[in-house]
Image 1 (cartoon, helix red, strand yellow):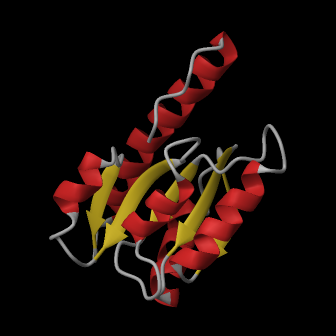
Image 2 (cartoon, helix red, strand yellow):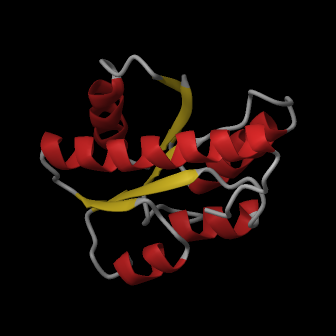
Image 3 (cartoon, one colour):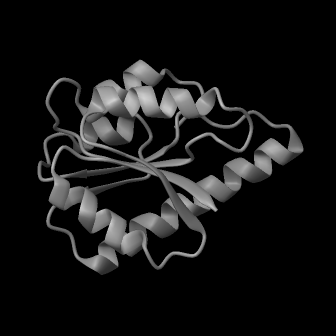
Length: 142
């Protein structure tokens, strides 16, 4: 399964994503974080567990206290950053999100169909990364 983390300072936002991912047979939620600092620690910790433990996809809120979603990506560095779907109520970060190669940018409240579209795009990117890794190619950043 695709290893996913959910990062949102709002419990309702995390619950919504968890519920939407609940029926996805090829997705496993491996972490849930209420702020950016926890997310950096959790994603970094998973990296060090070895092959097959890395987080492959993050649903990441942009605006959070202490460390925002873009700051999370900066802290993780360009190496082995998971695919990112930003989930936020704000549109002013959209351009920056795509500059860091986000898969998608969901504006709250988003319809279920829109979430599914973002998940499908992320799924394709994760599977492409896996195929590249099997061939020994370098995985693209973000």
